[in-house]
Image 1 (cartoon, rainbow, N blue to C red):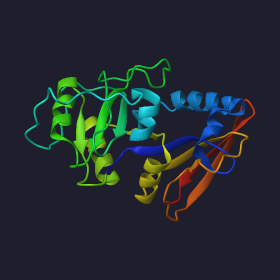
Image 2 (image 1 turned 45 degrees about the vertical axis):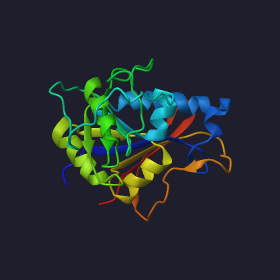
Image 3 (image 1 turned 135 degrees about the vertical axis):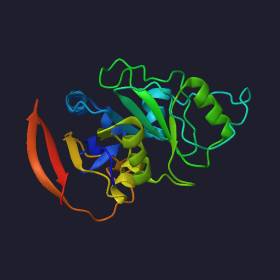
Image 4 (image 1 turned 90 degrees about the horizontal axis):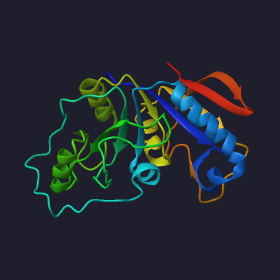
Length: 231
């Protein structure tokens, strides 16, 4: 299968969690800064997150009123002629994200101006498709009730020429990629904290897989572990 090269890039607690209150403690600040520095240095064609992470980081749970929109006639991919050199890929199976622009507006240069792509399933509301079309937000279908990660990646490469993609969580979408054997590299920035019981692991519902240790880096006293998928 032809797909982008996928790097799962995350800040991680020493006990292997990637979401939780530990990320907001002052001891995690240095690791977070290194994470954003590496994000920019990878020079990826796109970054990808699940719905929850996109809500928390970019849309702040805003959602449009769909009453003014008619139902889109068909559930087919929508790819406007205008292309971009950098994309924000939202894995949003039921179409629950509200966007006020077709690009990310963020102070961090690692995300700002990324053109949004929605990855959907056939469970999406047809009026939501009309809203995305009005916003000129591209969308692709990848599955009936659950997102088919391999199909989505194939379309992202074919339709948008995405060669390198940063997978940046959270736990559920990371797990979906891991179960699909779609991750080529792990980039793990470790902060000196143990997470609480409510925190979530790097991969939700993971399966056994093998990665080879590639290298260790230290940036501003922050350890970075790099692994690659074992052939």
